[in-house]
Length: 317
Image (cartoon, rainbow, N blue to C red; front, side):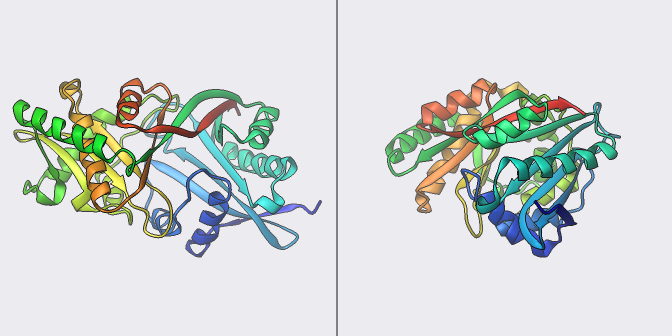
């Protein structure tokens, strides 16, 4: 077998990258969104993408990423590899992962992470053969908005009544006149994000990184829902609408710790779903850590059904 070559990916490779990942992923990867994120400056998370070729022809892609280790304890490095279906075998995946591991360890990683879809026996077998062990499960869900339209409409009405009684304002961010609204969400996220179960330590993003997320191609101000209690923004939920291909999906739902248990996350998610149904969206998706019981419960009551999940693997470098 010819040896593999690795070339640093450029913005012009974003479409190919998205095509390769779409070929092996339960949800399509959008090329416009991919190109956008590759163009953004990085501070808290550092990543490098590679185009993998054999015999002069592209066969797949690779990626290494890790947190800025000056900002967080531990030196976790994540490696990701995918190969076009006609070239996808254990030998190719193993060779790509081996080179990616070598590179991220050379940058200083002491623990390695990688992921596979739970039904991908080939990649799971390769990872296990390389010494990885399962660490966490990620749950993915889909919701048929056509079949569940009345359920979502009823839950939305009930949530609106509860929020009015409780003095919580629910609105889209484009209708909010507070000049500090984005900074308030950013600060609230610093509290909400660390509560998402994870083995790899969370790291607070900068305000500029947060704004880059808000301005991503699939995000829209009139579809980003917030919850207000007085001067405070205490919750947020937003669906991301892929500009070229893919399934509309939850980008983030979070609430301030002090308001949890009051139905705010449910109310926000209801608004995003009712809005999507009104826009003609037929199916939406979401994903959550398998240990995030509160949000998993909300998903189930809304009519979401399980889709192919993911497995995160870890090993020492």
